[in-house]
Image (tube, rainbow, N blue to C red; front, top):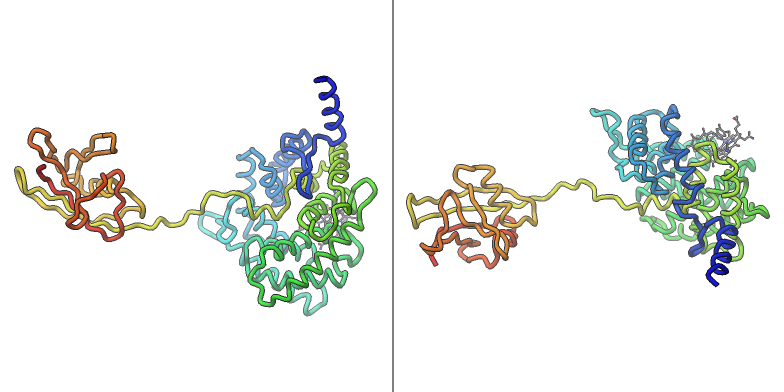
Length: 418
Ligand code: B12
């Protein structure tokens, strides 16, 4: 019985190449031999290429590649070349690549002295594309690049995205993305990703009727991409299939389940990958995301540590007073601590600023640190003395390890008897 189950499972494995299907998309695990092979190939390409390829960084990040040193090297190369003259689409890929690495493209250090706002450069380059279209009837580059521009501006939630998206959508409705007949699937797929982003994000559209235009454009492009399917699942050619898979996996609302077999496409792509079809790094970078079930839209949802937001501080007026033993004193000090700090941080900051007066000691107890001496005046069980803490005139109900003072609070420690 066990043997029979194993045989059936193995038959299933061979049929699907170890691939899995989930809600309208399909993928193979990142441990898959071919995925690992593509990742290694992309990693190796980093040191071989003369200029950095941002698509490689996007692919490695979407595939959650673990080689941090290679990715860091690529980020560095991308930053160093960010100030160079580039086409709009290349700037867009730079923006997406930096974002995929949790770097802020609004502030890129190209050298230790110089920073560039790449999103601003992208805005300007996109405007140039549109101006060119207005004057000469053609874009400065191609609709493929305008689609990349739209996608990156959308990922950055930049308001300039609207104009670019409208031009892209209208071109799709006029069948202009097909112009020349070359590489329609690549261009259509990139346009689909861009318009889906705008459609989903519903970004600050000045004209709400635009949503209908985007809807219609997505319907048209999706139909055309599906129409480019071959019997073996290839869409367009093998090199456009990765982008087409990305597009179809985010536009499932625009076609019926039976119109595309993601699994069939994936199986053929894996077979081709096994035969070395993606030996070129650019081709490998475009196929890898779709194998692991990711799309360029996922650049938006990669988890990044919070950006270095300036920590807000509070001011506390702290006073220590002894009118009980030896030489009486009352020393005030004003300290700044990060908002949310416990009172202990105030004592520490005071000690750091003026150790000759504000030094203190604590003892660990079940309730946390208890202050047993300040300015060399020690609490004593025998003498029944202790350091009492007050906010204004009111004794605190918590110890220094728990109590969190607020901005401009007056805290006093008074040497007292009980
Ligand atoms: C637009 C485009 C073109 C345009 C580029 C003109 C322009 N001003 O943008 C034109 C029509 C010239 C072109 C030509 C070719 N292309 Co082309 N092209 C594309 C497309 C759709 C977008 C590229 C792009 O803009 N990328 C974004 C920008 C920002 O990145 P970039 O690095 O600056 O892009 C430049 C290069 O990609 C270069 N380029 C474009 N195609 C090719 C092909 C090769 C082999 C090389 C070395 C460079 C190259 O032109 C881009 C603009 O400067 C891609 C689709 C894709 N999936 O990538 C196909 C694509 C890259 N092209 C492809 C092919 C096959 C060709 C041709 C070899 C077709 C042919 N039979 O002649 C020729 C190149 C011949 C040559 N002279 O060496 C294939 C490459 C597949 C592969 N594994 O090598 C792709 C993937 C399309 C596909 N699905 O088959 N292409």
